[in-house]
Image 1: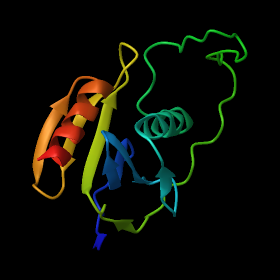
Image 2: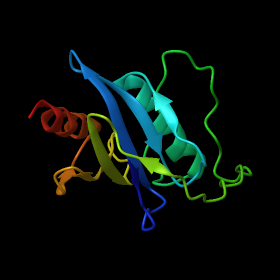
Image 3: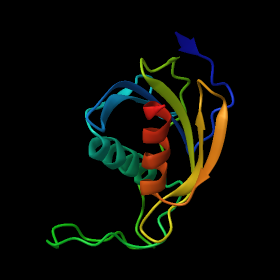
Length: 144
């Protein structure tokens, strides 16, 4: 089933969960910067994909630099030229087989995300203060 998201906002994503087993989920991500969905195969895959998206569109801005065990990547300097922000698209969004969540990440502070999630099937909205809290809310919705 398709969902119309004409009011989708730049920091927003739709997470369509198709499979949920043994506390692990997989599915599809929809956002305004791609015509097609991006598939994810685990929770970590989903978080890493969204983090790369937020970095690419520069919204919401990162409040602190990432830390790494290996210093392979150089941090981007403020005065360096940044890549162009992708052009906004209008993806066709399909509901997840298990659940569908509209997630808006407002801030990336304290090495985490803060924002609001709406469980589409139940039309329930909740603010979250961290990625962990977002994942627990999603887990709770699918466990009901």
